[in-house]
Every structure is written in C-alpha cells, then in structure tokens.
Length: 213
Image (cartoon, rainbow, N blue to C red; front, top):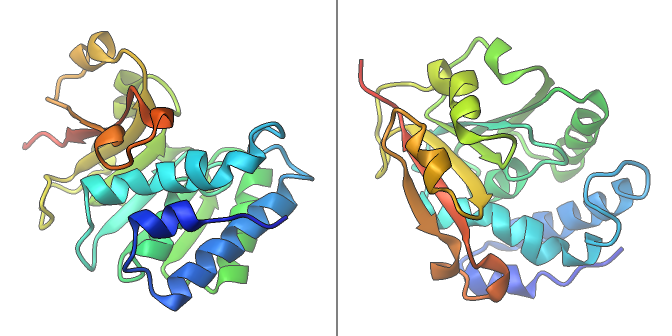
C-alpha cells in the first residue's frame, strides 16, 4: 500500500533523504502489517499520514529533543509515536514497550527493515522497565493520572532539554478535570498551532514535568 506523505514533508521541510525514505518505508510496512494485525482501524488506514505519523510528530514540535536524549514510548502499538520520532531524531535513543507481543513483533520488524540503530523494543509493562529516561511519550494509553503512576519513577531528574524532563502525552478532548488530578503541573500544547487542520482541533501534546525530589 502506497501512502502520500507530502503533508509530513510540508511541516518538516528539513528532512534528509534518508529520513524521508524511512518514513515512506515505515508507512508501507504499517500498511502491510495492518492486513494481518489490527494496528490501525481498517477504515482509518488511508489516514495514516495525518492521523498517525503527523500526529506522532506533534511531539517533535513541542519538544525538539537534544542529541543524546533517552525516550521511552509506552503502549507503542505499531510504533506510534516512537518510530516516527526515532526517524526524526537519529541521535536520540528510543525504547518502545507494549504488553501485547504481536504488536512488539511488528515494531521489531520495522526497526530491522528500516535499519534503525537508535531503537530497541520490548514486550513488557512500563512499570517493570528497570531503566530511567529523560522523557516518556505515549498516545492516549489511559487516563493521565493512572499513566503517571506507571511511569513517574522512570523519569530522570537531571535535564538538558528546553523543557524539564517528564511525560509528553498525545491526547484530545476536554482535559481540565483529568489534568487537575495530577500532582504535577501539566502544560497543554494545542496541536492545531503546529498543524492547521480541523483534524487536530482539541488535540494536545501534554507535557507533565517530573517533580524534583
């Protein structure tokens, strides 16, 4: 299945030829795998460039990671948002985790086929990962207060990026009540400010900074 990623290239004009090639190859792999495993709803697969790849890369607009940043993607599914971000930031390290083995199988295949040496993947619950990371990323895995309980101890305190270390979470809708239940002070970055399409109305990158000890 061929996908037109011009919408991605339009918003990321500095992509290298290798990054562009990898994004197209990744989209093709997801299209192929989606015929065997339900990664993206069959009715939605044609919207992969905007709703999944560009949506994932909204995190890059909110937080352009410095080289050497370590990021864990929790509940990665078919590799979102982790793999598009790993393609965009080859000098950063990514660890993609999901509790569902067949989805990690897809991610491992994509890592291998794309030749990504800055990514690892593991079938494991986030709270069982022994390492710490600068940032945790995810796409609406669960309610944010519960998610923070899973990952709070997995975030390094020492920071060197523009935003404090913490969680970068893709979520939409009316979020005030949910965010009010988090002990940290989250900031919501409207994705519509990065990508001016109605598709992204009421969708946000939520940054939850780690609390200092």
